Amino acid sequence: MKASVIVFPGSNCDRDAAVALETATGNPPAMVWHGDSVIPASDLIVLPGGFSYGDYLRSGAMAAHSPVMREVVALARAGTPVLGICNGFQVLTESGLLPGVLMRNATLKFICRDVLLRVERDDSIFTHRYQRGEVVRFPIAHKDGSYFADQATLQRLEGEGLVAFRYCDAAGEITADANPNGSRNNIAGIYNDTGNVLGLMPHPERLADPVLSGTDGAKMFLSLVETLH
Image (cartoon, rainbow, N blue to C red):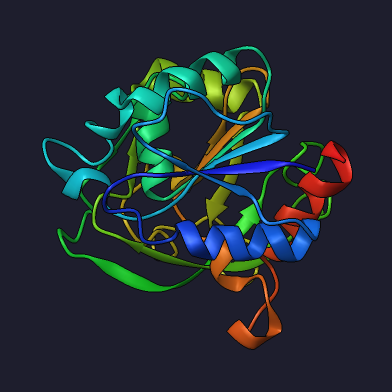
C-alpha cells in the first residue's frame, strides 16, 4: 500500500502518522508539502494533526485553500481514500469533503487526554479490524474539536450510518459526561457519503505501538493495509 501524508506549516503529527503507516505497511509514506500541486500515486492520503497555518481565521480554513488541497479534493471525489485526523478533520470540513464544522470546545479550553470511543461501524475500509460497538481508547489534543452540524445534516449522518466513532463511557454508553468537547450526538468522527473519506478528532496514530501504552489505533492502519494492499 502506498500512502501520502500532507504536510502543512504548523503540522505536528505528520511524523507520528508516517511512523504508524510505515509500521503497518512496511513502507515509508511520501511526505507531500502543502505548496505542491501533484501527489504521488497513492492508495491513501492522510491529513495529519497539528495547527496548520497557525489556526489563523479558523482551524483548517487556510489549509483548505492550499495548492495541494485542490488535488486532495479531486482525488477524494474520484475515490481515493482520505483520512483526516484532528486538524486534518478540520481541513476536511473546511474544504467541503465532510459536512459540518469543528467549533471551540464547550469548556473553551485546550484538552489533551485519552478518551473512550465506541466504534459505530466495522464494515468500512478504516474499521474492519474493529467490532461494531467495541470501545477503544484514543488520545485527543484540541481546542476546536466540538463537532457541529444543523439538525438536517445530523439526521442524514445518523440515518445513512455515516457516524464513525462516538465519545462514550467504559460500558459503551453515550453520555454527556463522556463527551469531552460538546460535540453534537457525541460525534468523534464521520464518513463522507461514499465512505472513502474519514475525519476524526482523536489520534489513532498516537496509540499504535505498545511502547506508546496502547495499540487500539493500530487497528485502523491495519484495516487500511488489508483493504487497500
